[in-house]
Length: 66
Image (tube, rainbow, N blue to C red):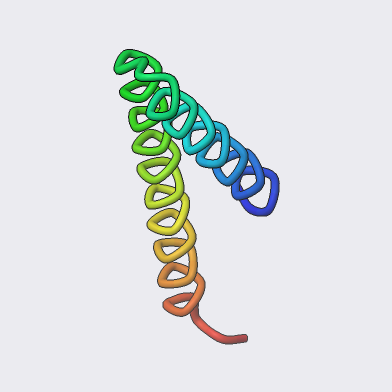
């Protein structure tokens, strides 16, 4: 969790955008669709990462202070 995951998700999103653009430019609907799918997966993973971090922050905030 953290920066490594964010970099991987950003990379997958960029790769998906490139596939979608290539598919659109060449008329390849299958490649275009695959690119959109990869972007969706990256977005979902990034949302999950944010939820995990938010949960951790709440957990840390509820810890008793010594």
